[in-house]
Structures are given as C-alpha cells and as structure tokens.
Image (cartoon, rainbow, N blue to C red; front, side):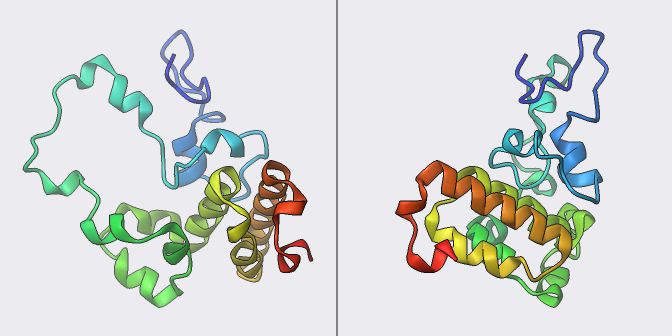
Length: 162
C-alpha cells in the first residue's frame, strides 16, 4: 500500500514498469512522463518497499557505515551536485552506488526532482543543463514546464520566460 507507484502487485510480484528504483537506476533512457511526477524528490531509487517489508524488521546496526550516505554527499545541494563536471563526478562517486547511473542518469533524475519540487529560481539552471545531451535536454524542458505550471509564468524572471 505504501509503494508510491503501486508497483507491488497483490501476488507480491513487482511491476518493473512502475518501480521507481528501476526507472531511476536501471533504465538508461527517457523516463515516461506519467512516471516522472511519481519520482517526487527521489534522486536515486526509492526503497519504500524495503523499508516497510516485514522481513526486514531488524534494522542495520548503527555502526555499519557502508549503508549510509557520506556526510560530504549529504551536504551537497542538488544544483551543486548536478553542476559537477564529468571528472569530479567520477572522482566523487568512484566507490559509490551512484556511479552506476552515470552522470547523465544523475542529471536526468535531477531534472525530474527539480521539475517536481523546484522553484522559478531553478529555471535558468535547468536551461543550462539542456546542453548536456538530448536525454537531459528532454527532462530539463519537462522540468521547466512543470515549474512554470506550478508557479505560474508571471512568477518567473524575464530571463526564465525565454
């Protein structure tokens, strides 16, 4: 019941076509527009099913650092994370699961997060990301439209309306 997309069916099977972990981690291409609002602010995966599963009732020991986000990563604002160039991304995520989605996947997912929760202040940043690749440009454009619809075109600076 807590799965944000209804990906877990009554028989316990997971419909990968609705699973946010599949779309944000495993899938390499465009995320369908009907899935994007369901991503919410999840940049990488979802794990709601893992959290609520009764078989996972015993939490990991607090001392196990392997499963915690690094303090450095947790302290980086989303726009700063998305602004990392390829070299810094590779260095920062060398031993991280985030390396798996590659920089383009991070940018794609970040555009979706900004589309779902961003403000007009994010529009120029999203437009700048459009030059990264056609995949990122598609998601950045979608994000800009979502922000404009949510906040109204009048709320944006003149530069953001171009």
